[in-house]
Length: 367
Image (cartoon, rainbow, N blue to C red):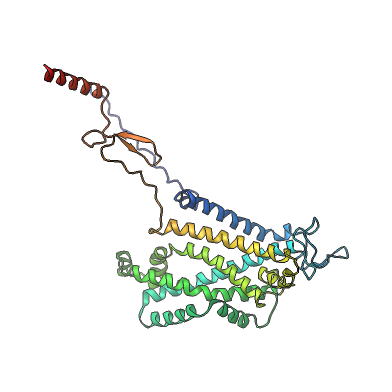
């Protein structure tokens, strides 16, 4: 009688685990790089939280000057009623700083979305098609890029707004003006990357199979030329804040009764600073610094992670020649090194047997 054959059941196929989005990038950081990334993310999260919930957090309206028929008063110092004091227009500084975060967030989001939707497709088409299309687009983008950014933003803002000072019109004009500055940057990055990868085998294979140009651009090339866009988006967010503040400081921003804007509030506080009234300038200026700092820290940290030339890796400490141990990356002893240079762990008792053999040799030589 033969023994029954045992048929092993196939092992179940487990689906790959999907990690938390962005956690892999976070795990690639270490040391001071991780600290800067965490600090930047905390500052950005605080900025977004304040911007979204500004109507709930602000004790007064952005242009409110009275409460229960009582005026707030001009240049009131910080107090329990007005944490950041009041302005020359009798407005609460704390409320205007909170509402200014909402205005800044709107401008950042609109400008970056428009820049991506305009600059990325133009860069793909210019780099892939080439010929006269590439020459025309490169000339136009180089001309825009060479123009002074703030002056270009002022001109575009005036043209788009047409003298309109409403909240929506002011935000839209500022966003379009900033978009004009950012489009050449995205165009140049995507165009150069497209030129580098359009002759790759996978692109040729897609072309041979009869794929359309649009499918090749947005299905095969786009995913391989946008690795550096997260870094540019983060850094451009900080630049958008500064450009918006510059427009408001020069008087081309949003009317103060329609929306709060930090650059405009800084302009109105200049005359008061020389008289010792510091709170109207310090708090809007501090808000600008914190937001720009947070976005810059995140952008620099992402650049070190995504850029192969700047990526930091943990390496093991060097081992001296003739040493008996290997020092790992944590500074701990990992494995002894044998005399012949191999890293094989010796068998138990081998070391004592070698010592006895050496003793017998010495005794024989002595005899």
